[in-house]
Image (cartoon, rainbow, N blue to C red; front, side, top):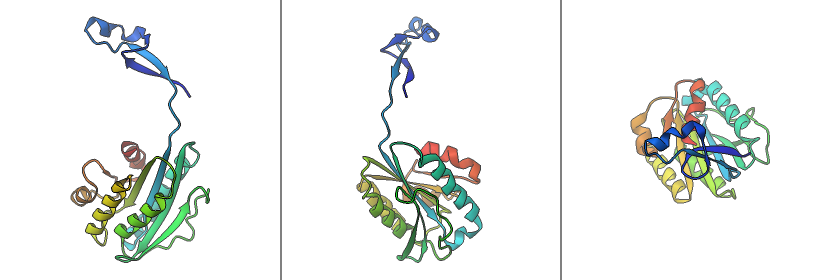
Length: 203
């Protein structure tokens, strides 16, 4: 769908911005544009380890928010997985993708430790098979992995493969998240109501 791009230097005069000409600001025009269809793969990785057991309702709501928001959108290839396991052994459960166009949370194995590094590495392998030119992996967790160094290495491997990796954490573990993901590559929330804004800032 076309839309107006406002406050530009080239285009049709915008009566509401002509005052800018009097102060030397050339951005007093508007131009109609047709945005291109997105060519984006989004992967959602959900932590369902034992430390997340009291937050399972938030995990499920998060999956539903992403599923309902992204699955119908043209040009976006969305997939989601849950994970648990041990330090280097991860159980990754697919809960939706193009071949599974419905959200399946009934058979998700919960509990165990938090092998976040191994889970991110597994999600990276799966996302490398997606044909889209831009790929984004969002890791939803409480911020406490079994091995922070494994997470750091997996995140670096994602970025080297052209997959942008971000985290949304339930608690403000800023120092750990900063070391693992880098400045501006994570968000913290306290309630599911804060999720849309966190996702918007990332995307």
